[in-house]
Image (cartoon, rainbow, N blue to C red; front, side, top):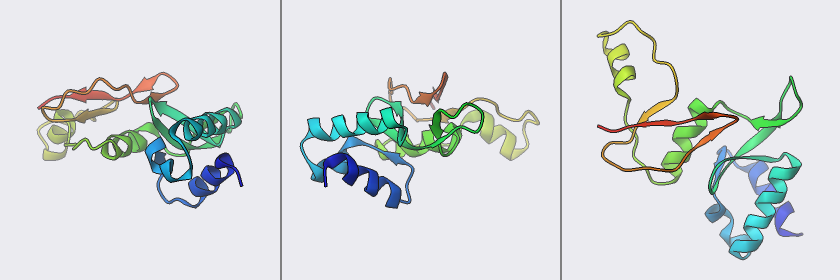
Length: 133
């Protein structure tokens, strides 16, 4: 069984939806794992959310192209947690939940504290926005 099929089977069995090449390092060398992940992205088994961050994919009902199985609002924070970033509630979400504002928060904003992050995580033109406490 080659690395691509082993990764495909592992992704299908996994309960998580976000993956990094580090998750599959036991399957082979770093270069061969990245090559297999790129092949799975090309065939539609995975979608790329950012540099070194992948998510399970499903075909779109409208276009038939691969899209993530969950919205970016769910997968983005999971990806950041997988990268070791501690997340907090954004200011807009906090104000809405405490009743200080009636405006429903829009966009995908996550509070990363004092941490400096330059990584772009997103899909199809929608990206996470970072807020610093």
